[in-house]
Image 1 (cartoon, rainbow, N blue to C red):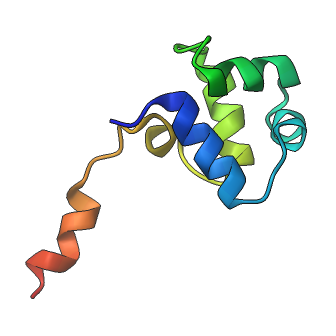
Image 2 (image 1 turned 45 degrees about the vertical axis):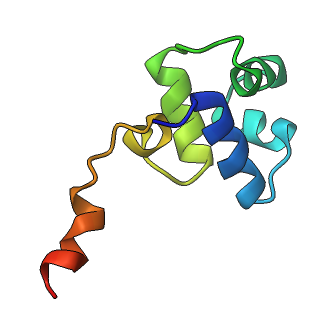
Amino acid sequence: MQDLGLHVRNMRKDLGLSQEALARGAGVSLNLINKIERGVVVDPHYSTLAGIADALQTSVANLTGEETSGKALAPQLLK
């Protein structure tokens, strides 16, 4: 599983968002986004994760790396 902070940072950058824009979209402080990305906060509240996931246009499960890999394997099974 990828580190939460690194995953958030990569997803944010892929969408072309600044930390400030992500914080605004997630309804949290810029300071909190910064701390999550730096790994200072490693276990944020679910409501925080839900806001960040929404702002990053993804699910909490994908954001935290807990989404099952079955979806990725499905196309292989069809071959």
